[in-house]
Image (cartoon, rainbow, N blue to C red):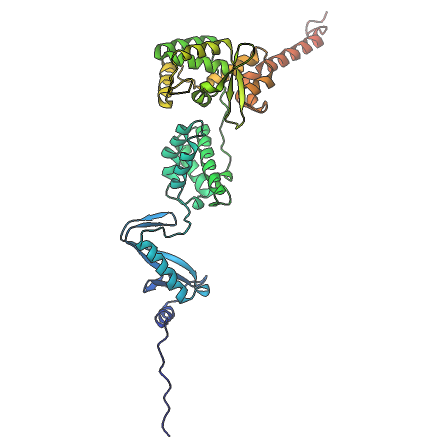
Length: 402
């Protein structure tokens, strides 16, 4: 009886991939490829990969690749992806690379890209955008710029903070940089790129002390004299800061449209946007009215700002004036502290003072303007002294008994 031969049939469509998989050892460090599809076997499961050529260069998972390079992209576990699906996904990725399109449909941006976009959006609302730019350009972007924002961890931030402390950066400055980092990552949370902010989980920054420097009468006179030598408008700025207690950013952005007349013939400054996010108003003192009269004589028809000075010019003239006055240890915010100190010492109610300065309660006054509550502390000390004086009036000191 003749032997019946079986049908030869067509070779299996994916036989070359199956054979490659069977030849692979049980554990591998890198995938091996056949026609751009890679296989990697391991203890935790087998995975499929795609190799994609980048004729125009590109970016994947926050890393930038030069033109002509190839990248390996993990497609997933072999148990959940068949060969046809792997081939289709690789073809799609290669087509995007050939057309110079992003490989990721919704790529998570790097910290550098997101921070640049965040800073551009903050220009209109930030009081000190120049300071934020320094934080980014000098410290944050060099450290985290090439990382995807979802790859920044609390441990990574703390290693950076350790390096900052070795550079002898002050704790206060480091804390301000961390606040900038927190703001950027919070912005990423709102856009759905992150679910939590790693900067909120770092250890507390120690050594931060509230600055309590304020100027006495002699120092104020020296500073004003020096400012008059440097720039006449700077003298007006300093007088305004001392009398209003306004922040530098608030003064820089103050416009003539913010100055309103009040029934008694005076004027009031309305601040629609402040650091706390709440509007407030400041009634002008006589000296503030004189400053407004002087600045009105030099008003720029094309600029509605009361002090139409660029931020850089402002900073340079201020630094020169304090150097001429021999007051290198003061900063502009100390004028605000001086205002609070003198107002409290003269008997201004602290709640009224807190409202004028833009604080919602007395906590900030007590923390940052310790001498501002000095009048109450002095009164307490005097009462304690009076109490003990009364108690001891009729007591004869030891050794003096008759």
